[in-house]
Length: 302
Length: 246
Image (cartoon, rainbow over all chains, first blue to last red; front, side):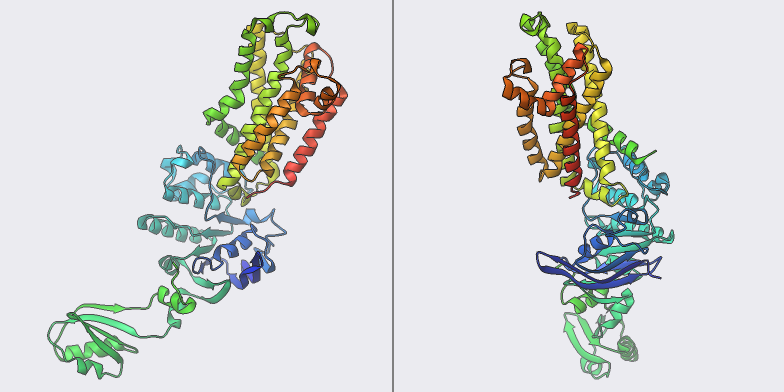
């Protein structure tokens, strides 16, 4: 049974529909991503899940609870990391962890969480003196303090440097391994690709696709592309004559071959027969980014 | 430990880490009392006041002012600031409800106002030979009532003000008339009938009179206690009603 069920969610701001019938279901133990361009309705969707916004239509259930009517119970099972949230400037990390764990019926061991999140050397540091990454890690710790069954993480690596981002990703996987279902909002393709078991792509208030990252990528069928520098002069026409090849282009010393099917095998067979090596060979695969652009007609950053 | 207790402790610690706020809320009143006490005529028996020294009368006014400063500047800006910064938004996603949050603020403010009161009584007693309230239980009860009514008013201002800045503006706008009716510039004894009636119904007018009565050894007039209770209930109820997380 799904642990989060969202059906036909509608939300309007000042008469303008921001969500237009969003539906998806998250299974227990999944990392479920919500991917979409800025302004697509990702944050509004999760705010309805968190009970921070009342939907104008549709239903939301989290562990069987209705966030609008069972709001008192929800925080015991749902941990939330908000996109923008703050703690009092002068609250220390230790105080924040102790304080927030007193709010829950079954608090997690905050020392252990702090260890996982590498906050132990910052216990005495006031919130205002934490770096962006440390604030983010503290925020994740606070979201997990109540031993929630579901954690909603909204744009959790925005503003982090690449190393910190990778650290947080590793961390999210460890949290999932503890049995927490994760709803992850993101507009980073790499993040979605690396972390999510399944993804809902949202655009202009609608779900345009729900699939695994690989599934989304395989939906787009367009040319593959191979780039290489031949070690000896090569008759381009011979490559172009191959049935798998669509086009051959010369870019400086390099050849760019596009086509489909077993393109790489066909090209390397010709090269091997001519005793020509393919130097600096690169096969460009479709990424989630390509799939995303194909689905929404724009990039995530736009 | 209960969330209410934990939150109260955390809020108190945070409060004490803001030196400027602490000064205005806690030290300002004792300093004012000391300044008043240094004026010779304040310490001399005054026939107009039935032979009582004015400093004895002023102590309850200074107590009321300390509470008012705390309620209308410290507390309002704290809460409005939390809302502006998103601290309340973060709390909203936890099991802590507005009642626990407001309750913790009230408890902290009350505990700290009792600390200020203690300092005022000690300074008054040791420096200016002001006798301790003759009816101490009544005095403490009245102090709690004045504190509750003013803090409720402060929370109401915080609930209604759109941001920290306007909360501060509304707070100081309320401060001066309330202090006027408390008798800071014109003692209640010299107010005419209309002013006195208004004063009786304001939290600080009713509060100062009750504290002065308890100091002199009388139980306060029920009308003053009722006025304080009414302010607490109405302002507190409205503050909870109009409370906004964001």
